[in-house]
Length: 241
Length: 49
Image (cartoon, rainbow over all chains, first blue to last red; front, side):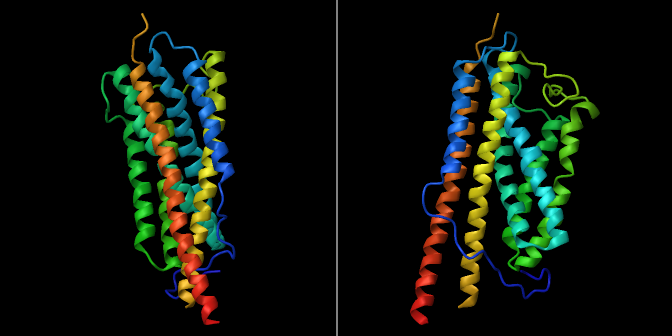
């Protein structure tokens, strides 16, 4: 157990480093996403007004749900719990959730403009939802850079837990931005009080796609957590020499 | 008439796949490097003891 903020903290780690073989859980996550790709590309109807570009929804919105609500939700919860319990495992969970969430947010920020160009006629517009999502992406990059800049593990965990908590304050604003501000981004079609505004065939692609993305997230999170554990084990060995 | 804009979603699906696979590979490469270091440290420690 570390002693945060005292300047004498030694990195510790669980006894066994991550396993060496194929990570079948992660591979199964990729297979689930591959199945949803096939379903979305070949077996989902084309939306009449937007055309084939509307299929970007299945990768864009599902990645956004996973990033904002699963990854950054977990970042917030584990950061808050770390500040309370000072358990370094929670710090590793927060670090892993932030990095995996950054990958998902990157996909959101790449696929969004690819959808916006054919539908809105522009790659990017500085409206509230897009701008806040980009700002969150920079905050998470800052969070990860902060982690890399502080060597003392207890101090690093405490500072980054505070920044992690502050960063996720943006999440509800991003969700509500389409109601609070005049924006080009469409209103929610799934996460809203009434039933989803999608045909049943599209729902049969969208919801499995969300579960496939959540599965991939779990696989990546587990792999990233193991990496953090291994890194701490190496640091502990180096410190012991 | 339905617009012909399939190219955008093909690029989006490919970009997403590249990001996710690339990120998974980056975790694997970092883990492999750390594991080699861990093994080297373990060997040195056991030689000294």
